[in-house]
Each structure stands twice: as C-alpha cells, then as structure tokens.
Image (cartoon, rainbow, N blue to C red; front, side, top):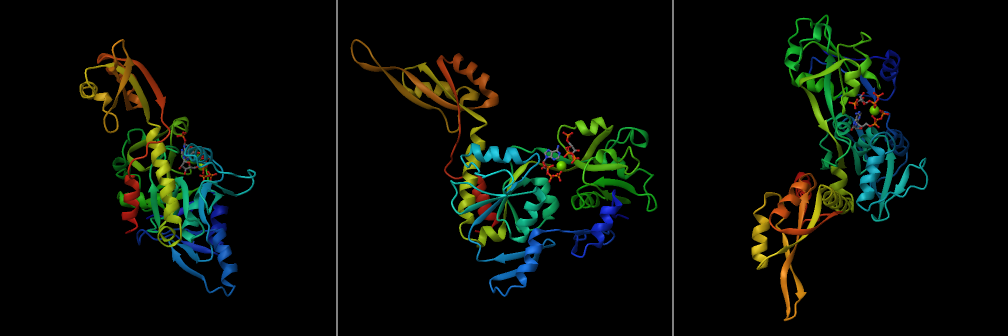
Amino acid sequence: MSAVTSLTSLSFLHRASSPRTTSLPAIAPSLSYPRVCTKLASTVTCCSSSSSSSPSLSASVNGGVERRTVSERSAIRLGLPSKGRMAADTLELLKNCQLSVKQVNPRQYVAEIPQLSNLEVWFQRPKDIVRKLLSGDLDLGMVGLDTVGEYGKGSDDLVIVHDALGYGDCRLSLAIPGYGIFENINSLEELAQMSQWSEERPLRVATGFTYLGPKFLKENGVKHVIFSTADGALEAAPAMGIADAILDLVSSGTTLRENNLKEIEGGVVLESEAVLVGSRESLTKRNGVLDTTHEILERFEAHLRAIGQFMVTANMRGSSAEEVAERVLSQPSLSGLQGPTVSPVFCKSSQAVQADYYAIVVCVPKKALYKSVQQLRAIGGSGVLISPLTYIFDEETPRWKELLSKLGL
Ligand SMILES: Nc1ncnc2c1ncn2[C@@H]1O[C@H](COP(=O)(O)OP(=O)(O)OP(=O)(O)O)[C@@H](O)[C@H]1O
Ligand SMILES: O=P(O)(O)OC[C@H]1O[C@H](OP(=O)(O)OP(=O)(O)O)[C@H](O)[C@@H]1O
Ligand SMILES: [Mg+2]
C-alpha cells in the first residue's frame, strides 16, 4: 500500500480540489498519487493564447505539462534561480566565465548576458525552471539535478548538458530516528524488513519529493509505505509523531544530527549538484539554441577544468630541452595536461649567446601543488612561480560530443 498525503491537510485539500489538476504518472498500479496542481504560468498563458487564432501556436502534453511551441519567439531563453541557495553561486559561475548577467534591478525578472546575443535570462524558482523547460517557455536552465529529477519526472525532453557545475552539492537521502525501534536499523533492507510495517500500519515517510520518493522505495522493494508532504522543516516530522522516516536533501548533515535522525545504507536516492539542462525540442528545433549552448558549455568546461589547476613555471639547468623534459617527466606529479613545455633561456656570456638553462611550464592539480614543488626542487628546479588559471580550452569538449549523441545529431 502506498499513498501521498499532506502534513498540512489544508494545502492537500486545496491541491486536490484545484480545477487545473494533473495527476502524477503512476509508477505502480498499487500506488495511488495525489492530484497535484501544476500551477504553471505557462499553462495560464496557454489558455489565453489558445483563445487567439494564431496558427503558429501548437500544444502537446509532455511529462504531465502542457507543451507549447511558439514559433514566433526568436530569443533564446535561459532560466536562472531567482533566489535561494542556488542563485548567488549560479551568477558567480557565469561571471567567472565572463558571462556576467546584467540585471537592471533585483526585482526585475528578465536580464541579459551581453556576450551572448539574442539570449534572454529569466529568473525563476528552480522548480519553475524545470516546468518551463517542459512547457517550452524556456530553452536552457541551471538548477540542481534533484530538481530536474523531481519536476522533470523522467521526461525525455530534458537533456543534461553539463552534469557537474561544481556547486549546490547535496544528496537526496532517507533518514530515520537514531532511537527507539530504529536504534539498531542501519540499512534500507533492515528498515524494509521490520515487522512493524503492514497494510494497516505502513512505514510513514515525509518528503517534499513526491515523485522521486515513491519511485525510489518502490524500485527498492519497500512494501507498506505511505508518504506525506510538506514544504520544509521535514526533520521535525518523526519527533512530532507524524512520520517514521523522512526523505530530504542533506548536505552538511547538521539538520539531521540536530534532530536525532540518521541516514542509512542504501538510502541515498541521488547525489545532486547544479547542472545545465536544456529542452531537447529547443536544442534540436529552435534557431541558435545549439550554438549558444555550445558556447556556454565550452566556457563552463574550460573554466571548471582550469580552477582545479595551477600553472607552474620554474627554471632548470640542463644539457638540452629533451634531457630536461625527461627529468621532469620522471616525476609523477609533473606530467601536466599533455607534458611539460620546455623552452631554452638564452644568456649572454663573454663568448656568445647560449642556453645554459631552461624554463619549464606545467599545469598541476591544485591538490598536488606542494608535492609538485617538492618534486621540482628534487630534480634541480629553482625560481618556481605559481599562477592561477582562468580557462583550459581543449580541442573539443567531451560533453559536447555527448550532447550531440544524446540529441541524435
Ligand atoms: N542542504 C541543502 N538543502 C536543500 N537544497 C540544497 C542543499 N544543498 C544544496 N541544495 C540545492 O539547492 C536547491 C534548493 O534551493 P532552494 O531551497 O533555494 O530552492 P527551492 O527548494 O526551490 O526553494 P524553496 O525551499 O524556497 O521552495 C536544491 O534543489 C538543491 O539542488
Ligand atoms: O545537511 P544540511 O546542511 O543541514 O542541510 C539540509 C537541510 O537544508 C534544507 O532545508 P532548508 O534550509 O532549505 O530549510 P527548509 O527545510 O525549511 O526548506 C533541507 O531541506 C534540509 O532540511
Ligand atoms: Mg529549500
């Protein structure tokens, strides 16, 4: 048995009685789901637009969301989080890639990135970014992978363009109390096998993830479970006697600890971080979207690759460039991206101009910096200079090839 009820029964009733309801896709015949109002601005626009006689407007249903194709929109639209913990880091990443967002004032929801012509930035709540990608009102978005999973509901129209933007790290994880009947329960398997759960008295899970939660527990063979939902502070639910377990995002783990809850083995639904996601329809059909995506992806890849590395230069005596290169390559932390650059340093002696020593340039991972300096010294390096890197552009980014293949191009 499984169902989703609301911790705040009023909001559940409100949702259930909403005139514009769309049921979540069933994942098992035995599971029943609440009817959730999608509350899409696009749905509203769609209603008003469909009353016009515009022949270029068409609609189809995609992942429970009505999709519009408005051929007259020529600007490319990128959705960014309007507030919350993803907002500042998203703008920071774009700025570090020389894609600064120009917003006239913080209450204005549209902005531009001057380097990307014909691109509109729209600030939206993360879940609305995903919904609007599905409805065709946005082409690209930057949100957490968890949000894509929950609100995208596995839709084939959502394509992850970059899966690791380096911020917003967290995991969606099941947690249970560390006390009482759960004291010796440490895995999902043990939790599922507890004799307490039955048709009449199911395991009660509180979660904001009403799509991913039931899907995960069903896929993991947990029977006799019932779900309730709330908008926040879920960690209070077990102590309040409302739920036995919670399924929520965890990053530092502090909130769980402070509420005497623990994660269990096998209980992680997904690991998440910020991603760049696009609409397949837009990427394949809307003019310019693929080119703009290529540029954004290249900048992201080049920047994210560079921030993990330092550029190290040093001088070294040697008989030839090859001999110096061999010495450098004998050290495990000095192989660089493709190998060291070795250049002669010409000095003027009393006789003639000659190369007595060489300058070497090598990229080293930030975490191996000190080891690299020690290895350089061990082979006779001196005058070691360390510089930060802004970009490392490769011939082509692997993610671009992956994207083209996902799009069947
Ligand atoms: N500890 C965390 N708790 C929640 N979200 C986190 C955490 N760490 C990173 N994130 C990321 O931040 C996103 C949530 O951001 P935020 O809470 O601002 O948005 P929201 O959930 O849409 O807003 P709201 O909570 O106001 O409805 C998550 O989807 C996730 O990708
Ligand atoms: O592992 P931690 O670092 O402690 O973070 C996890 C907590 O952060 C989020 O809540 P948020 O701060 O968004 O508050 P909310 O639950 O009221 O939405 C999430 O829902 C957890 O409660
Ligand atoms: Mg939140």
